[in-house]
Length: 187
Image (cartoon, rainbow, N blue to C red):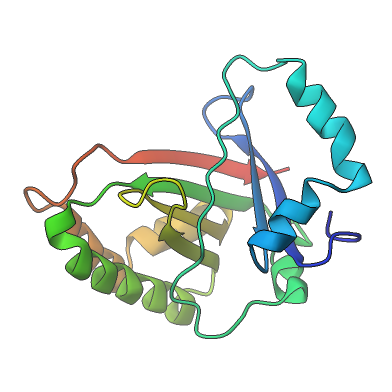
């Protein structure tokens, strides 16, 4: 994908920490047109045929969102560099879906932007913090984070900006549904 799909900037395959039979893909494209073009490439067709044979225990879930809060466009080289050494250094990933109440969207966005800024600028083991509202459900916000090992995530949890997030998230009525949280490792 990264070698032949114009506009593709990241493609990760991960294995769930708790369930070794569950896998995740995280893909990033410059825009929707690049994502859709990927589905038409020759190298994608065997995967498409395979998935149409219903080989999985549960249906594939596709979650698309436009990343918010990036201070500058992220290049393919930057994204590829994040995980180039995954076979030497463990990449611990967190995938979260949150459902904030409509009444707190502004405060939620401000708090998340602060958390992202703190993560990006003060955590040496934090490699990626990407978030945005999903394309199919405006009440669902998706987050994808990558850390240098589980220790990197633990350091994130101890950071002052994360404490502010926890304080906000712990308030009554902030969320309309329970969060969906998944932990995985790049394979």
